[in-house]
Length: 417
Image 1 (cartoon, helix red, strand yellow):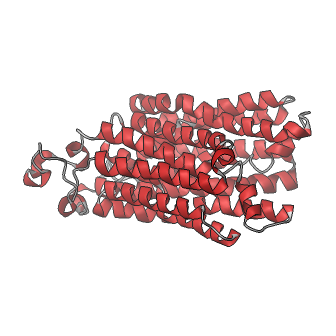
Image 2: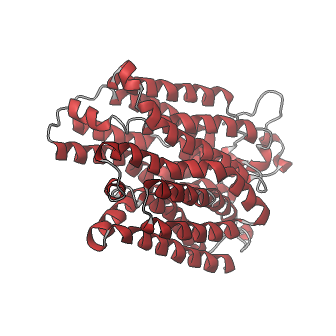
Image 3: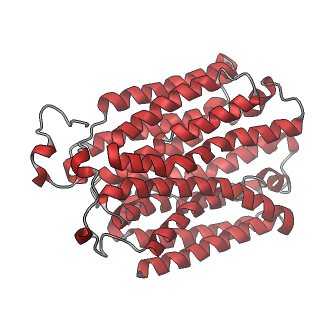
């Protein structure tokens, strides 16, 4: 049981103090700040290996170029696969034992595993450890569960937007740091530095995060009397929310397998391909950072479904012109616009998920949301690669745009429900 502090009487003594969110009104802003920092540091540590992952795979004994590429892809994807599998489980445990223990578990687990990756002796160990990092980690996912259930309903969109900005910033800064640290610390030392950063986040979580959680009341399911239509969305609406969450990263990641080849057709010299591809890929995250909090706040004012449908249509519109660009900077600009539209989806979806289920089951449902999101990160590159091979590179943008528009139609149906 997590006590809120000595200055306040435990809520268990006064059951009339209300719901979990109401009892944690005093803490959610401070918890949001810690969760933003923790999400930023963990995402930095997970993404900073991108520039040197193939080099590390070579150090671990892989020689041929094809095998290096293959093992690098497997090692990078393993973490997201692990997170997609276990996010609903950790969400259910958060409903049962509290949100703070899940944050501490994720931070400590990732700090340990990140350090162990720096001591790997073979490429199989690297893949297994990356998989374990996803299975036991997920600090950003645990943060969404905590903030999504603690923030007041009329501020949830804004709070989740701020949290999303921290994660996006970590994904952007990570590769930049990964380009410099190995020169100073060595590749293995860089992993130890990443583990140390996450350890700081773990310490701050233990010391500063506060939660008023009481298993004897908060972990019990509500009776049938409270399962009213206003509190319980239909299964179809929940499925629509989860599919939309998957579509967010599917749309963003569908171009990943073809982006370097596509840019090479735009007249970029071979020696600049990697640099330009990195800039183009970063533009969508940069665009999302600029608008995530604003669009989350907009969802608080005009409703989550309105923002979701609008953002899906805008993203689809921004996707189509990418098939007709003639210069790489045009593609970068359109990817930034696409990222600005995509940024409104996840905060709005998480806000609606919280409203669609009973408070005692919100962690579980938000866990499924994270699983759907990471599934999109796995499915997106696979879909983009297959469409690019069989239908042509330009078709990737048309197919992804069509899926986004179809998802907007699904969202309109769900809003009517």
